[in-house]
Length: 467
Figure 1 (spheres, helix red, strand yellow):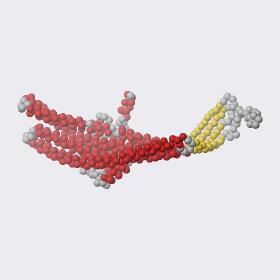
Figure 2: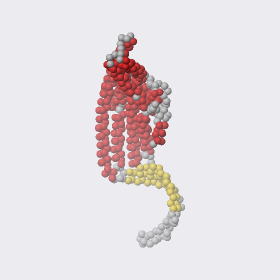
Figure 3: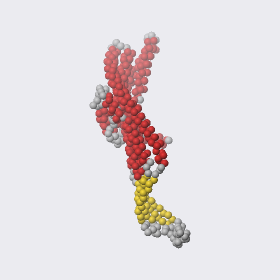
Figure 4: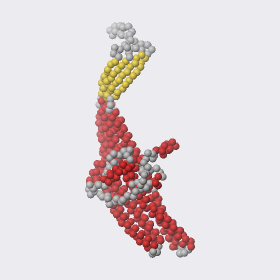
């Protein structure tokens, strides 16, 4: 177990490109596609399915067998001949085989029924590759959603945490002053106590924000498989807000059709139904007689043979009659499986159409919330600035100024939160309609920078849903 732990630690982040500067959203997505272990597992599943397909092709080849052997005995086998009419021995004992014989043969055999079944299995293996590819698409799209959500939360932390630290220091200083007023009894006892309670409520809110925001980078680092502890060195590029660039198409039927054609889950059911239909053909083939064709070259060292080298050929037919008895039960199983897949297809079709409508509604609501949050943030910022000017001119208490400053931080946090929700809702909509936002030629050998550039182009095209 210790050996396994040591080995796993050494290979978890081996051969990964190190961070070379500020990381934008698309580099984070590229790193997740390239290094995220869950996405890599699905990539390996696809590679495994491809190798199994390549292996299934060899099952269609004829069987070529080379045999060699040595047979020996302590004496000659010998033999005699007996008359069928009189029952008397008509020949003296004789032999036609040496004591020690070396033999060899090279034969090529081809079972026609096995070839037909192997051909069907190869077609089914090809569908398994397509299923693995769709599963990889599904997992990759979900990872992209998680990365976008975690990235925008981390950006919010980048924007807010410096203000929170400054605000926390301000609250600590105000608490010390309130305690001094209470100790020196410069005012009525309830006044400093109530002020301290307000400050402690503010400090508790700040600590809660610290807790929620401090793990944002940890979550993003986990998604891109960054070694633990290195998230502190991760610098994020603050992107422009994209709420104004996201628009929804007016035709919902168009989105529904795109979703029903492109969703990985529906495509996987299509492939499984095709596999099941081919299983019905395989069941019919298994009832047929088997024809085995054999041709080969033989050699024997027996000197009593007139021809030590000879060619051989044969054709043999066999028929497993019990397969006729088994077929009705097999056919019922295949038919039941088809009904299950058909029902799953209908249920998933309804679910996909509902997801499209829900995702569109989420994007629309998120856009409205972003507009409201932006207006609220701008208004609160103006109020905070006026409060600061009034406080500096001693027209406003420090408590009131601190309250407005906390309200501004909360407004900015809410603005960033709804912006992140909009990005997550947009990614969910793209996943709901099965939009393929992955590069066409995605390989593990691609560099992070090249993969990030391809992702940027693909995601830019994904915003053209109205066209």
